[in-house]
Image (cartoon, rainbow, N blue to C red; front, side, top):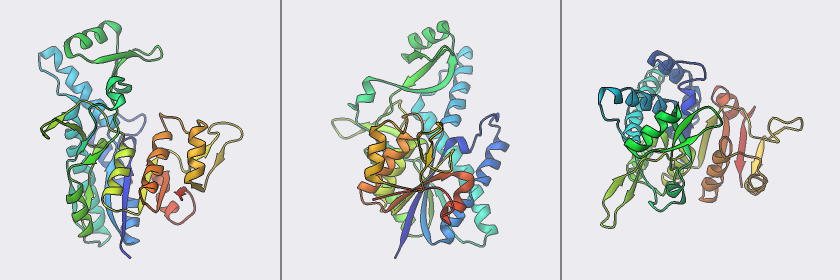
Length: 314
């Protein structure tokens, strides 16, 4: 039986906390993240890889803003999303090609810049809430709001940040091509940073929009579109836990979908951390997927051996 998987890398795996994010660090972190990918291939999976881009797009935004004083117009967020898909795809592609060669595995690695459709009437479009980029003083925030029509919010006394919509993904333009390439045995890097968001005009034409699509939701949609039976979500913890950070914290080896829904409703999985991952896992399994594995990037091989990680299934 043919096995297909989508593996979702977090953007924080490529620029780790406390690092400056210089390209040498990013390449090294990328190389260090590939053990699980090679393990999946050895286990017979055909594979697509997605990745986050939060730290990378944040850095690109800072670079854009540095040019404003030089009267260089900043590039919009959608274009920066596309740029990060290219640069990060290149790093993953080259690093994985080298790793596969050392392991005597003959597979092509291909990066596809992915456009992801959203609804222009998604509730988040009227209520931007996803923070992006650096913190600003109130004066600077007012200037950015006036000059570029940004939505700026005060963030817990730390300053002001731009917030953008985070709509749900509806479709992936390149999904058929990605599916074909994966079926042929190629490893495809796609939907980086959740993909480049766009909506359809009344005449069917595409129009880009400044928004951020959650990487986990896009990964679940891609897994559904290409007929994957396994979705792997890599994050900062080994296992999903309930009562996280409390004395009665309980780590879960297996989480059934019905229990996941109950815990979600009880507020066990916050929106800013595990919540989107659990919601994406539920969406994927209810769409026909077999199971979801959630674990940390440095424990993925052990997770495939059943020694750690959380399996979510029916």
